[in-house]
Amino acid sequence: MIFNIIDVLEALAYYIGMILVIGGGILDLIASIGMNRFKNFYLRLHAATIGAIGGGFYPLIGLGLISLTIEQLGINRYYIAGIAFTTALFLVITAPVGSHAIAQGAHKSRIVLPKPIIVDRLMEDEESEVKK
Amino acid sequence: MDLIPSYDITIMLLTIATGLFIAASIFYFLRLIKGPSIPDMVLAVDVFAYDLAVFIILFSILCNSPFLAIGSLPLVLWAYLLNMYVSKYLARRELGD
Image (tube, rainbow over all chains, first blue to last red):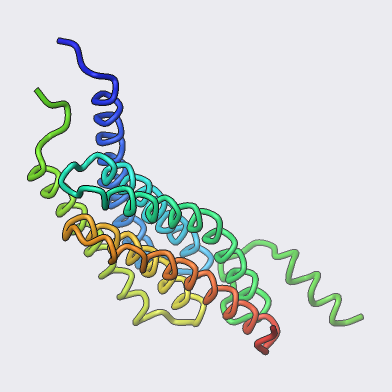
């Protein structure tokens, strides 16, 4: 049996997209459980990273690929796919910058302290600058 | 013979994915309610907004209404804006420009 090359490419996009969407949902569930189980703000940052990239970026790419292959959507599928890819691009640019900024603000304002810790060189540096 | 499964199976799989995302959003909302400090709440709002952005695209595919989809782009940028403003306020106790 011989398939057309366009059909093979469509099937590839469909299956990769479906794996990304279902796997992204499972990763998002894992991240939300970790968000509730971790004890500290600095530990919760790890769960938030999984929730942003695994639960936001992968499903958006997958939804864009899936919507390109659904015939029943008509001409609207290109519109939905374009928006999904653009949103995924902006998410993968802005999410790490935002979480770094919130971690820096939380550490500088001393609202949340990293409680079980061996050494904190950043805090020592800031305190020595204040003394000078 | 088609390589891609039928439309009904696709809709069913996307509905299962919607259920996974709803369950995750409930846990994020729990952390948002009981978060002991402001950075925890901001982190929870962040991932909640990313979840909602995926949600909007999913619903626009499931309901076949493309004008729903554009709302997800400002939502992601809004989460970034919230992060930057809150971190600036926490670090310097003022909302600069």
